[in-house]
Image 1 (cartoon, rainbow, N blue to C red):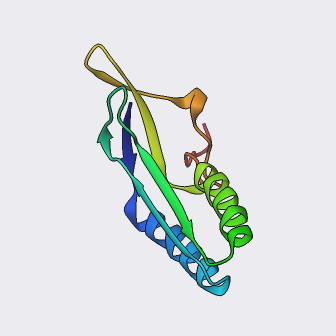
Image 2 (spheres, helix red, strand yellow):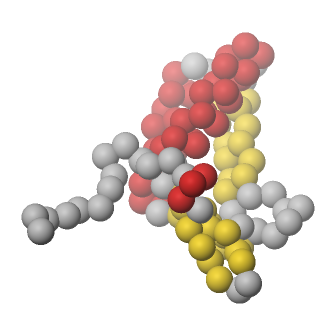
Length: 103
């Protein structure tokens, strides 16, 4: 697979999660690959640190689901030297889409 990341939106999204975590007495960390990621390589890791187990478990679940739905990261399959957008495994970001005019 291969990934493109739009950092300005990702930073804003992650900053909101940092605020949420601080309010709950927790810390959120994550890393995501950009570019090509080959078989048996990891593309993503996330963690929540909290002195309260329940806070960490609940927050990591919410974080990962929100990441899948709202992080501006686009996936591509690598096939025969080409990057092919993985549309069937992608989730549109709320408020995004192509701008179109009248035909």
